[in-house]
Image (cartoon, rainbow, N blue to C red; front, top):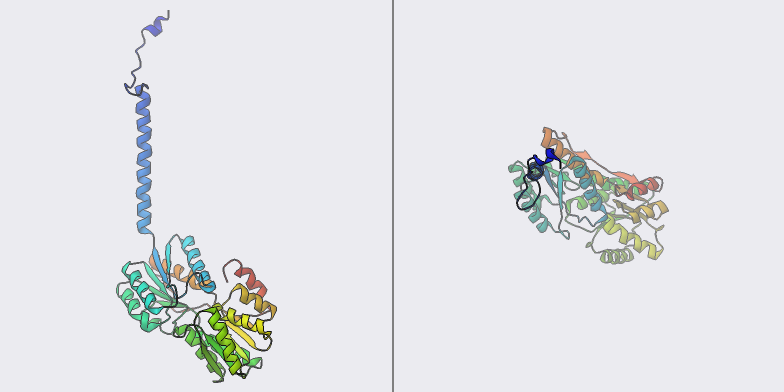
Length: 337
């Protein structure tokens, strides 16, 4: 018989669990510590969420559009890099009334900044001025650079649409073109209207404007009908992938890609392939990735330090031709151009 053990005090146990009480107390202390840590983490996350900058980007183009998907990619990349939130909003079709409604709703949500394509200053100007009156900084992108300051925006990021259209005409005329045609799939969009106006001016008035809808089949049929009635046309400018791809398809089906000088604004995989193959003479690149990326960076700097560029930022125009299309195709495959 072990006398030392016979005089040891019995270890008290918990009446319900049957475990020694010191183990139960230790478990409670560990559990309480975990709960405290989780509560602290939740509180920290709540503070971070409350402090996260939130910007709203409203454009007239859907992110399913090849052009606008790259703008959105730029905004998303900037948001991820900076740790901020960007909400992309656009009407399902080109609709200024709907865009104005999206603008009013965005202003009511009190974001830290507003980024918007100023496609129609008459339709959107009141809503933008309302944002400015509420101390919400505004940057315009892509369209409406000539009206940006009038509505109170801090700056515009994009290109001079008028000068880009003029440069396209001059490039075609230098190659022997005599009479041009500009396909406008969104007549009333100030940016696209300016492109056509510059193009017509660049041709010294020897150019026409063909207004269409955004439906690719209607664009193709309207173009074919117009060319059948106007044999003097020897050069055609499209204002983006929505009109250039139907234009290219019409030319390919008619075996007429070499009969006309063909140019377009903006890029897509089909456009770049056609330029590289010599089926189109050029595409005008306005580097729309930067139109998504840069305003988020500028808004973030303004939020942190009150810093903002003193003037507008030009992202284009640049011309993509057969000589440099291969390099641009590599970047296009990455969703950057």
